[in-house]
Image (tube, rainbow, N blue to C red):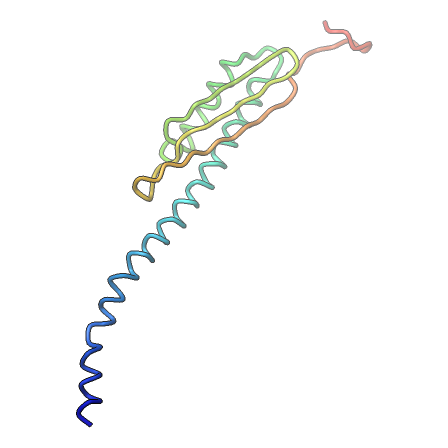
Length: 135
């Protein structure tokens, strides 16, 4: 009966060793899940800001600067901490307006740098005649 007891004594501390190896992996997995949820949220913020900027920039007497200002206001209201260092590009022509909002996502996992962006585009509003000519 003595060899049986000796075998049990050799396994002491095995659970502690396994926990030391498994817990950091589980914590990293949880942090990665949170990080990708933050990226998902940042994408929605960027898309919302791009859509609001498009709505402001595409009206008849608006300018690209009006779209940029609206995007900055939307980002300040929603994503100033989530979407860091955002850039807003508004391309407005006589026929088409495009807005792109991009930025870096706040890091939950140290050393992991991810980016999010949103794009919106649509026709620029203009007044035309019934024959299709422009006024």
